[in-house]
Image 1: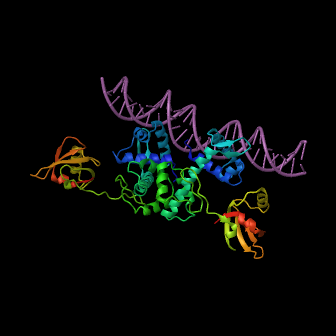
Image 2: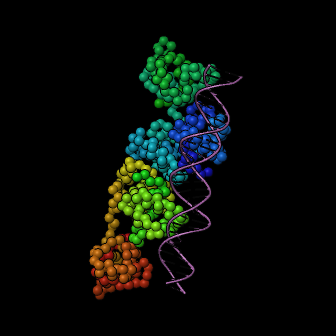
Image 3: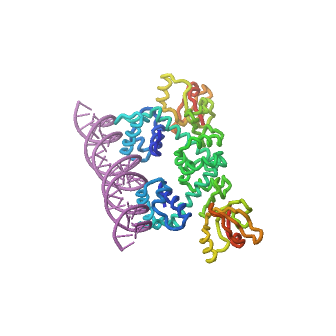
Length: 219
Length: 219
DNA sequence: TATTATTTTTAGATTTGTCTAAATTTTTAC
DNA sequence: GTAAAAATTTAGACAAATCTAAAAATAATA
């Protein structure tokens, strides 16, 4: 399926928004991300839905489907490989690459991407630490470890859970921890090995050693 | 001035057609080069003329002006630098690069081109031997030498003249030699050092040693 | 030089992606 | 549980780039 540059950008935005809260993505959220008007988004959603890249019911938001996801991931792979090229080979700073990679990601040439990947040594993460999907769309495993291995003063992002029991998840909701949350360890309490942490820069709270062992983070 | 991808492609085509016979370029010639219809070309010529990138009088064809030429040369520079990248770094064959370079040449980022140029070692010619203009739009000097240095059997293209007197130019017209002509040396006459040559594969003619010394060629 | 033939331009439509303004649906709040 | 607020969609327009068909200008030729 041949997609226009604009269609690719919409799919990418919808994919990224789907990664956060994983219910249906709203029209307004997409309009914000794309810096366009909700009316334009509605038009495009109808179009992407006709092409069977998303599941769209009017007024109900969209969910990206497998085919749409594959297309989005192909664009993301290209974007991140180009970022590696710009930083590793052309000596760009990590904050200068985004705009250019936004353009380069739309170049159509499977051979180019294959060769670029080889030239760069098949990198697994881009300069911002974001994972680069392989040719078949599979993301590499993150370097993740339990929060309990952090030392006081260190900060990391929650990228996974050691267990997923209902009580555990409910507790995480209660203390406002979700995937992607930035956690900073303030202090480790000697008495019971509990952790004083700040979630997304909010006021410190205490979590038990058992919780700390079940929150997987990475830098 | 911000140009659309299509405008850039038209300017490039007009620039290239101007290089050949250097009178005004016809609408049909552009339509052929762009693989589009003459009607579409007319529309675009009006547009480029409004932007003052070409001099266009209805039914009289177009001449590219300085500003249009600069824009075209910037695109050509990018195209040829990317071709060097593809061949030197990504191991493309010289016949695989054109289509991809056609896409890459439209990426907008002065820093990218500056860094790419440095990364490639500021090449002066692309994989097809075509000259790469520098940052200010100046083409490198061709490796040129007088036709008189050719040996029998060798072929080369006329790329310049050792002198430009009116009588010399008139004589060249008479024997149908102009810039770009392919000249093959058949034989060098020992007696007076005159050259038996074939111009663009036509039947052989004789030119004097003095002419041969004033026709600059390269391979 | 008239009269074809060719080239070029215009007129009117189409597609893609966008917009504003108005209508509709869903959500929120009293 | 209805009324106001917010979110979303539709209707109609617009700009860019293209096309076909027809008109106009230039070139070729008898």
